[in-house]
Length: 115
Length: 109
Image (cartoon, rainbow over all chains, first blue to last red):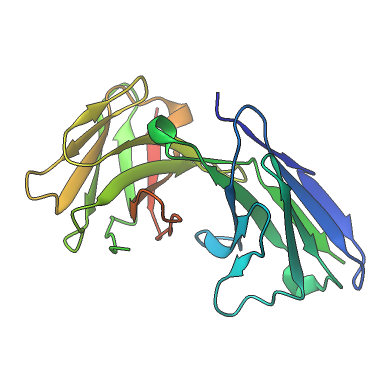
């Protein structure tokens, strides 16, 4: 139980285009989801907290107009990287808090390459 | 959230127990200790978490000192597939997880 499905697993896009990443909780409802970014040989960095039915909360230094987050239902949060540039190339990972026994569960990640 | 300190890397022989330490001397009373691991190019995998008492599940055991200032994750019989970066995280129950640098565990044949 407590599975978070993230799609796509990898994507290559041209500079200037936008990319949408989906994160779904398959067997539980997630009122809050988290989006992380991980550069090579570095740890995960929290980008934003996604709240169902309300605006996301962004960490300092993360541009909200560039990384659009939508959490329209209790099972789906999306991250859209707008006008992507090569420096946005990274591993993006979503997470959701599962009540009680499992803490937090993570998606499998999306490898974004902007060319 | 309290900060954690972990060794950068550790080696362990296959079949032996892997003991991964973590210091969290500034932990507060309502903060949990979480352990996750990340195998290359995958999302973090939950291992175990605890508040005060020692915990055990099918993957590992978590030993938390009485003063809660440190903990040890124990993988009882390490296999090659346990090679990963292990993260010790301290957080309140409703807080997001903040990842440190973790410990690169390498299980050797």
